[in-house]
Image (cartoon, rainbow, N blue to C red; front, side, top):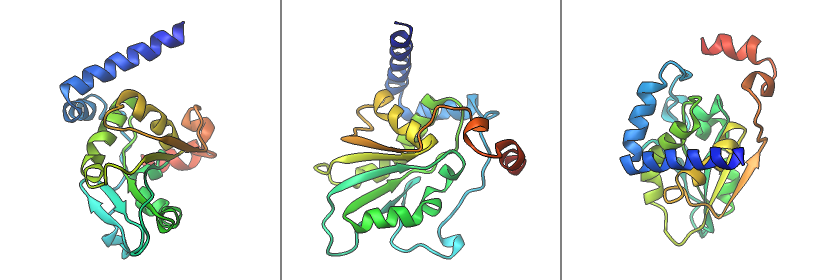
Length: 194
């Protein structure tokens, strides 16, 4: 009963944010959670010397199947907490292999804040231009690694109209604090972020 109440409260909170608008929710997230935001450097494909077939669309990156390969579906990918800021680079080879097999890839970088409703609102806003370019008849699958897997479960719950999914594939999903889920988190990651 307590879990049902929490889920209902989260849905109501998300519905209020949707009524106000995803853009406004994102602005609120940036203001209210700036002290919680992990500051990671931005990554541009061209600055690293490789772009390939990747295309920057709004705040997301898209990858279409090679010429002659008919798209079967769309895969919206979200990476793990720290590499989620550059999933088009961190997961490049895996995502290109999936695309080569007939899937349109949308990957949305995100900066983790520890308010997941606000993070989801940001992802919805940041992926809107890429989602608008995809054929409506294609099914959409969510694919997430680690924190991205958690966010993939929340997106269609909080924002069902903006994040419809046929199914999700969750890789290394967990619900542990980062210090328990990431080996040497305190020794390696915290000094890097600070």
